[in-house]
Amino acid sequence: MAPRSLVLSLLAATLIPVLTLAAEPAASPAPASTPAGPGLNARQRELLEKFDKNHDGRIDDEEKLAARAYMRGMSGGGPKERYKKALKLFDKNGDGKLDDAERTEAEKAREEFQANREAVLKRFDRDGDGVLNEEERAAALKARQKRRLDK
Image (cartoon, rainbow, N blue to C red; front, top):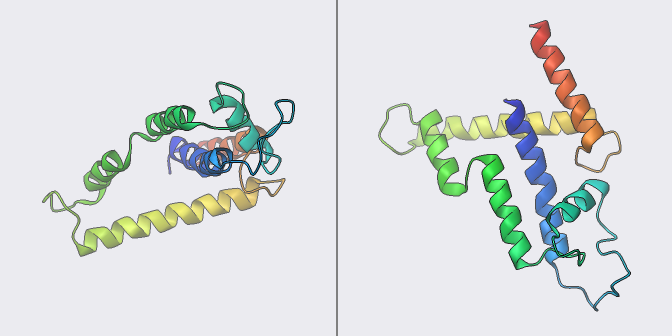
């Protein structure tokens, strides 16, 4: 798996809960001095700070669109673009669609990707919050680079 793919997957896994938690309406409006999102972990707070442009402690619709655009740019596009990439990778007979065998191969690759992601989290997620912070991510990338140099 390419380092960019790993980073993007981990970023997406972290960003989705931030967007969901931050976009949910509060039971009652919080005072301006109270920081929003007490249930957010450090990485989610970091992402909230990145996308909360008006600093109200929430991700509003406009900020959510900007975050999605950012994620699409990082991951190479939305669902249609990802499907086109999957076709390039797995459409072995070139008919423009995935037959059962090609779909099975794509699903196997997705499962391997997910297993690898879980293994990376298990190995490098020192604080056990389910996401890699900057330090943990740096350690994972360093280990990957070392593994490549050793080959």
